[in-house]
Image (tube, rainbow, N blue to C red; front, side, top):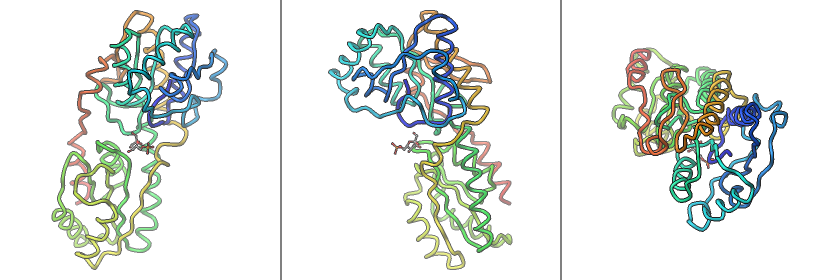
Length: 318
Ligand code: F6P
């Protein structure tokens, strides 16, 4: 099952789960539309051939949803009854922290074996250095910013580019360094408006004619990206400012090789862990090894950004 916001690599993970089941002679059923479909019994048997040609596709062939009904005890009871009716005895759920919270509660209530695979472009899950889709999203965003840079420098403009990342700045920080942004605004660090202006002034004085500022959508500077534009234009008439909100294009596209390989490894581990009788874990990547983290830790733990990158960015923008 895939649930919550989709991410590139989810299909590769579905393929891996299905093929690992086939390898071990276990019947596998795909649940459509996340917990919504689980409640409604929207299931379909999947064999090794049913997942052909999807490893390179973005999105999720099983569709995804954010279910309100599953948050209620009645909804979860219905889901349990449907699973039992379909003779399902283990669940691999691919998604983010909302998905894992649902899986954990479900396990507590019905003692139903669950295993999580982290799939979200935000990379905001504890217990894995990379979530599925994160690497692809980084490459998508860097490519987009490179293009924005072309037009920014032709017109000597300053661009605020908003990238996804509701609660964390992983995408902003990495693409900021990768695309050579002059400033990076992330939720983990409140730069403050004065320091932003100061930094832009320094940038101008150092001879730069155009600038890119990458802003994570969850940034805490206190102004949204359009208000930031107005603020800078009011205070620095020398800048002509434009805003580009990249939005959901960051979630689409063919997964990178890294995400495909990671998804394949995670799917194998998820199924084989269930077969070993393990439950309530998330499969993650830690020091390039596939490792299990208890779901409650994955949900409660904080995914830390790499602070060293902030310093690297400061040095690179000298
Ligand atoms: O969690 C992934 C994410 O893409 C966030 O970065 C973003 O804030 C959110 O999902 C958008 O959700 P939706 O597609 O439901 O608007």
